[in-house]
Image (cartoon, rainbow, N blue to C red; front, side):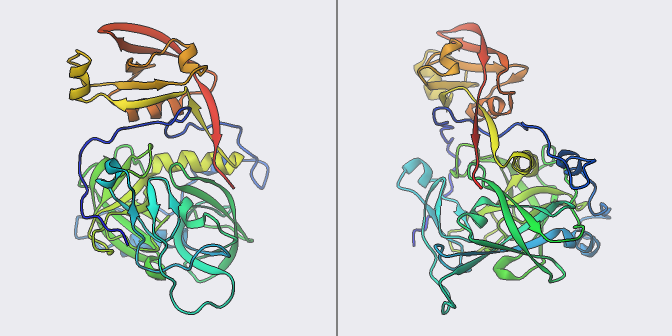
Length: 408
């Protein structure tokens, strides 16, 4: 098993494959709700469990746990092709030296992942038939039974079972997956009204804020761990869209796809990855920000796929060394490393070596900023863009193309 004990902070090249950008803007019309009167988009924000007021850092979590417990589920996956889950997290590695310095660790499943090779975990115990099972976590976001989890939890699933906190089990149907940020949406096939979570504000959560993870580590349902937000905006080499919240709450195998709550019982993240030189929890976990996961999940629930803006470029951060080589003192902006021939960027006048400093009303500090901004832009729109070219400010009108990603 490959293990790596280093997690550097060297800037990661924010490369975006030709025609690929980061994150997502909501697109497509909302489908009708079951009663025909409200849309999923409207119900996606329906209040869930009441917020629980905190009385200090030593306040009991029991009220919060009781309030949010019915919204957290265990995801049981069976697949004829997947290996059975072993509870030791799988190791995340790559032959690429840039990524090797950022070896994270996706936990719960042996599979090919976005950032490198994952070793298949050893099988545990005798097999009872041709199918093998895995466990993960998820949380309900709509009273009709829509569940968010990780893509790597349900990838390759032949059968999905959703177990509620009260022990009830329902069959689940995968509505769609987005491997690019590791989010998937499952629909519970069952009667009744389910209890949705309440969304928190991941955009404004601060380093040092208290957070709580709820999930099924090692199959132990409704397990709660607590900690703080350790850092924001982490890149761990999992893909070009990295923007993780780093937390020190204990996250282990089986927590994948489970919710990360703020101190008021609102979801601020989706627990997705850990860094571990030992194979166990060492207090470095990573969660997809709720704002990102929510946008992607809403699109999947509406359309079965995710639509992203694209312009057809490869991006690189403008480091001091690169800026010096270009004869510039500027160190902020997204360097255009390559332009796709015939793409909208080329047709709009963007050139290799340009440094994008502003996209519409948004300043661009690095490649990730531009990737997100392009992805969130309305497909077909024209966005005023400011670039630095050979030391001169150049204004362009950049047309946004689109692409649909995601798999059911």
